[in-house]
Image (cartoon, rainbow, N blue to C red; front, side, top):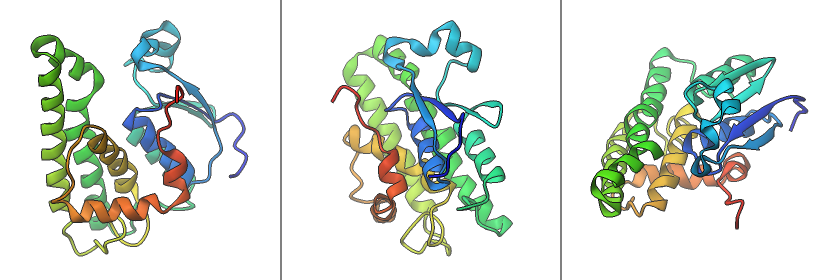
Length: 214
């Protein structure tokens, strides 16, 4: 890892949005310091964290004298300023395909499974409804992603081509959530292939969630 003094990531270990950024930082070989923000304890709603991100979300990244929020914006900045290990293909059409996969997860699947949404569902309908809501949402979304991976650039290794892209940075954390909530990937062979190859890379393994209480 290159020494990137002053790079700080505010994250929560189980946040899929923060997980995306950890993967990108690892792929770019950017060393950083982590400051945990415990979402379950409400630390994201403190005045200190709201000063960093008025939406009260993670991740937040301090880098190059900037304070950046929103995982895809952060990863985009890293890709534009650190060209090593590019996370988008060269062709505009291929870039659009990779972005579409990433946005399907980040904008269609993830927001409906956000912790605040799940808390609201549980408050209205109970814990079983919360679990079913989340499983159904993840399963439906990943089924769509599986179909999106059926394209000429899919080699069976990563979401596009033979190297990880933005799409892989976003998909793997959602697959982690699928496993956590008991969503079967049995009928999603392309996604299973991508997971296998991503898990073979140190960058993905080092970024994986680790329970600090374990």
